[in-house]
Length: 331
Ligand code: SF4
Image (cartoon, rainbow, N blue to C red; front, side, top):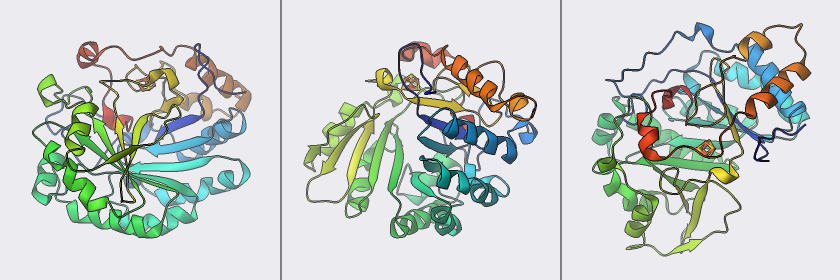
């Protein structure tokens, strides 16, 4: 059975948060002064429950891509044992696995991650300036992150993307220096519009649209448009360079009509949209109960998807919603 919503969108991409905590306090995601209270991680899905969930997704629901997010997934205890545990599923079923990480705990794990079948690696980096890194993230971990990025480039992944959330008067002056730094590598650089999430202080004056970013970049670089097959980013090649760049325009030009993503929080709640409230019943109680069959769990996930809206509310409404924090869902 393919996971299909009421608008006939097939959902073959699932993002699973492995932990609802992060070691950084990025200003757009997990600011230090946040009003959001995080719960203890006692209630998060165990590795056994996650294994069962992933097995159901790839065996019964024809999911083709799973990305692990957080918080910061690589700070979860025994995380490499978990990847080793799920690797046999990757050999048995035809699906891709990826991770989104802030890169601070990545350096010594890169080779094992490749060995355990992680092919898609997204690393967040919002500045190339060490002191600005501290002011954006609250932590002095720039060197760890940049070393991991440089080694990830050498290690070679099927897809390696550097994600930069662009905020006016914070890091919008670094668009060109990011391209300059990465232009000789066969990777992707993605410029992400700043989005409103609970407690992140979003307002119009900090927002820069993808069109404004692009106008800045074409002052120096020739961009060659890449055909976009309903993908979420607007992609370009940089002329005479190896680098691809992409813009994620969630706010100024949403791409909900081609949405194929389903999210599952660390506690096992289904989130049908990045901006929607999690479904009331968590998968945790189902996954831990061996008398409930895999088919019943698959049916439950399918029926939850039927509540998905067609597109997210407009930005004014989004900024008033008090129902999601990016840290627990990993974007
Ligand atoms: S905002 Fe929601 S519906 Fe739109 S693309 Fe993102 S997850 Fe999908």
